[in-house]
Structure formats: structure tokens, C-alpha cells
Image 1 (tube, protein in one colour):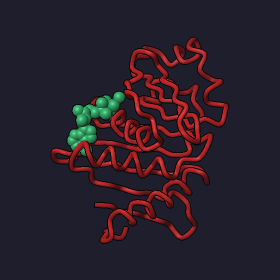
Image 2 (cartoon, rainbow, N blue to C red):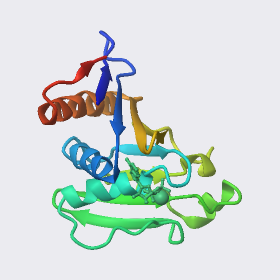
Image 3 (cartoon, protein in one colour):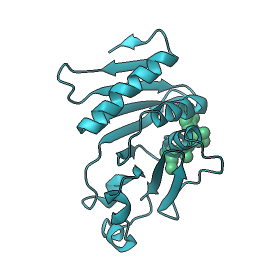
Image 4 (cartoon, rainbow, N blue to C red):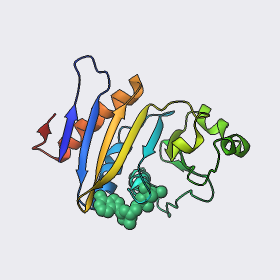
Length: 176
Ligand SMILES: Nc1ncnc2c1ncn2[C@@H]1O[C@H](COP(=O)(O)OP(=O)(O)O)[C@@H](O)[C@H]1O
Ligand SMILES: [Mg+2]
């Protein structure tokens, strides 16, 4: 079930999707893959086990990545070079202090034209620039609820295009 809220002035476009099982999380990732643009900064927010890595796995598989998609919990970053873009998958869960971000020397990844997908961005604050797109994941029944919030023009475009992709896949959406 998709709910899309699109203010007339395009500000803060939001999309919510109920994901009854892992398959829907992967499918949502595949839809997101279709609307990614170089340089997009994405934050994935949600507790342990909320589906952040699963969503990223769906993105990468749809982009043509055929190997494993490992959680970057221990490596901090897993870089991917797929069909049409570079994607950098980060996980800062293990930081005890945000200053560990500075020691890790990752700034270069964030200033290029790769897509950055960050789990646990709050653990690196205040050293991270604010994102184009924020994705919140939380439990809902036995499944998950995903909410997309566009914070910049690029992020809002992403949300609006994602709603179109999902409506193509689901002919009877509930209007927001
Ligand atoms: N929509 C969903 N409904 C039920 N389980 C899900 C859903 N999406 C993902 N999962 C499951 O949640 C578990 C944790 O997922 P993971 O992506 O590793 O979470 P995170 O990266 O947020 O810690 C996995 O076992 C995965 O299969
Ligand atoms: Mg994870």
C-alpha cells in the first residue's frame, strides 16, 4: 500500500509504503534504483533489524550487482561500481563517538558523484552534510513501514519519480 503526499509547491514530498515481507523491501529497493541520480545522498534511519541493509540490497541487485551485499557494519563502507553509477554503502553503527568519522577518512566519498547510502548517519553527526533523501524504516505488524522524505530539489524529484514507478507497479494506490 502506497501513500504519496505531494504539496503543490513540491516542498517536502513524502511517500509511505507498507512492506508486508522482505520481498516488498527488496522490490522497493528495485524501484528506488530506477530513480537514483549521481551524487545523491541518502540516509537510512531505523532501528537494528528494520530493513536498511535489505533495502540497499534491493537497490544493488536491481542495478545489476550479482555478488553478495554485505552489511558494512565492520568495514564502515562497501563500495560498488554498477551499471551506470558508483554506490557507496556506509554503516556507522559501531562509532562510539562521531569523531571516529573524521579518523575514518571517508569525506572523499561524500564529495564525489557516487550515490551515498548511509545507515546510522546520526552516529557521525555533526560531520555529515544533510541528505537529499531520508528514508525511515520501522516495524509495522509483521512487516515494515518505509517513509521517504525529500529534503533537497534532487531528493524531492526522487520521491516524486519513485511514486510514479510504484504506481506503475500498483494500479490502485491510495492517494495521499
Ligand atoms: N518488509 C519486511 N517484513 C519483514 N521482515 C523484513 C522486511 N524487510 C526486511 N526484513 C527482515 O528484517 C531483518 C533485518 O534486516 P536488515 O536489512 O539487516 O536490517 P538493518 O540493516 O536495518 O539492521 C532481515 O531478516 C530481513 O529479512
Ligand atoms: Mg544494516
